[in-house]
Image 1 (spheres, rainbow, N blue to C red):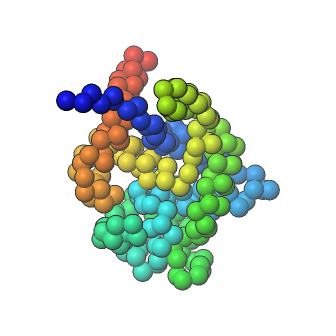
Image 2: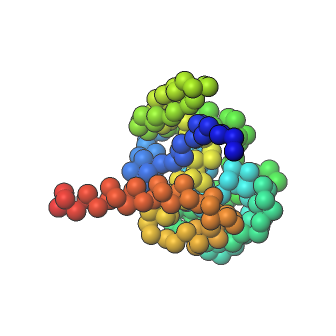
Image 3: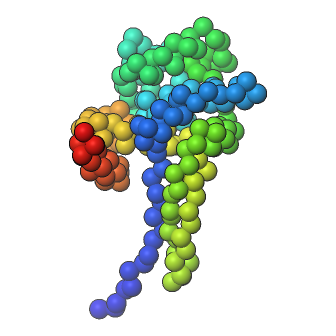
Length: 209
C-alpha cells in the first residue's frame, strides 16, 4: 500500500460576532459625516438576526414580509424558508416600511462589494478588533497571520453570527437548520464546536458572582 502523507489544509476561521460585539456594533453612535454606514449596519444586523445570506436579503421584497415571519426562496439553493421574526429583525423592517426602494425591496441593500467595504469601516470604528490568527501552509512552511476581526468582516458574517449565537442560546441545531436551510448536519459542525466553546467560557461567569 502506498503511503500518502496527510495534507495540511488551510482551514478558514469562522468569522462571526459575539453577543458583546454585536451589541457594540448596534449601539455605536455613527458620526454625522458617516451617515451612509447606518443603512449598511441595519442590513447587516438584519442578517445577524434572521440568518439570511446577502443574496436573499438583497432579493427580499415587501411581499415576502408576512405577519411575524418572512417567506424566502433562497437564491443559492432554491429552498423555500419560513423564518420567524424576532423583535430585532421586526424593528429594522419597521424602520423602512414607509421608505420606497426600487423593485419594492424591503431593505436598502447596496452592492455586496460596497457593503463589505463599509462593514469593515463601521466595525473598525466600533472597535471590533479582536486579533484573529489564521494558519496557512505553503508546501511544508507554516505561515501564521494575525488580523483584527474588523478587517475580516463581510456580509456572510451576518449569517454565521446568527447561527453561532442561536446555538449558544441553546436553540437546537435542527431548529436553526430549518431557518438557515442547511440540510446537512455536517455543515453545522463548525458552528456547534464554536457554540460549545462559548458555553465553556459562559460557565466562568458563575465564578464572578
